Structure formats: structure tokens, C-alpha cells
Length: 243
Image (cartoon, rainbow, N blue to C red; front, side):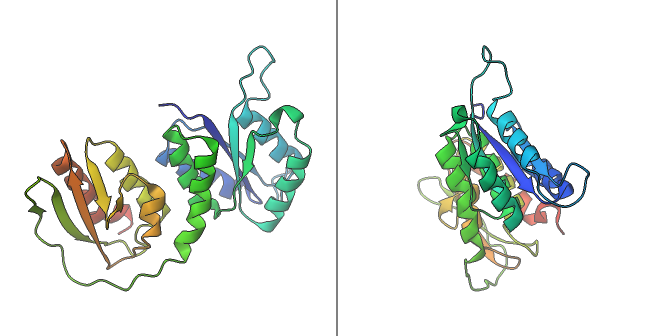
């Protein structure tokens, strides 16, 4: 399924914008992600022309009229100056882009990853926007530490597999690991939950707020349930490369 929504990442820093695009692209290949980072001379700041150009490119507005098929665009900004500059740009966009550009209120990196993963699934602009905005709530989750070790895998009478795992990487299920797990789960013919939430949803996983040392209960059912649990276990036990 192709992505119908493009993203624009606006930052005061070109390196931050490019780094965030690279990370988001790794999690969601195939999504068009434009960046507007820094000033034209390479210094720190935000450029009206760069932001405007990135949005028009992401929307496909630069194409000739005969080839033009406008896409919806979700814009994610990092700091106050980027937000103010983007708001100014939105006031002067070509009239053809009205109703095609949405500005997120989300943390920069986490919002970019969540939006990219949602866009890669073929979701519409409103759903992609909501996915980005929802990441703001992941920083307020509070969960008491969990103790114990990995338990024996169990299978119930209906064939559902349950396995309890301890999160080993210190930062836990933040944006990148959450995206890794969501992509893993989506690749199997199985219904998978993590602590009761949809294992194919980056946002639901991040909302768990799980950090290193806490436990997550993986439950899977369906044709490839066993393979899905194994893949999720390997990713969690491997610490997502952060150990």
C-alpha cells in the first residue's frame, strides 16, 4: 500500500532535520519526507523560502499543471522559531494548497517517526496528523517499575500464546523501538498485543511508557502467532541495538 501523505520536517538545524528524516525513513520506507532545516548559508535559523519550497515539493505543487496530483502534507516543527516561521508560510501558500497542508503539534523526532509509520500504512492526513500529535502524551505516562524475570511461554485453550518479557534497553519503548515492534508485528499474519494494546500501533506502544527493567506481556493469536512472538522477543531481548 503506497503512502498518500507526505511529511515536511522544519528545524532550526539542517543536521537535526536531515537526521530526523533519515530515522523516520528507516522506520517507514517509501514515505516522501521533505526537510527545511537551517538558513541558506548553513547557519542556525529558519527560512521562509525553504519552508515554503519544502511544502510545495511535498504536495507535488512544483509539477506542471498537466502532471500535478496534489498530495496532503503534514508539517512537523521543532522549536518556537520554526513554528512561527511555518505559521507565516501557511498564510501565504498558493490557494490550490488550501486544505492540503496540516501542521502538527508534536515533539519533533517522535512525531516524525509516528507520522511516517502511519503514512506508510496508507492512512489519510487526519490520521497521520493525529498519530504525530498523540506522541506528545507519551511523555506524561507514569508506570511503576516492574520486577521479575522472563516467564515461561504459555498457550491457552484457544491457541493464543502469551509471553512476559523484561525491557532491557534503558530508554525502553520510545519512538524508534516502538516503530521497530510495530513494523515487526504488522509483517505477520497474527493479532499481537503488548500489555493489552495493539502491537502494530506505534502510538499505542509508546503510550505504555515502558522503560528499562519493566515488563511487557506479549500475547499473539493467529496463523503466525508463534513466529510473531519469537520476533518480538528477539527484538526486546536484544535491546533494539541500544545495549
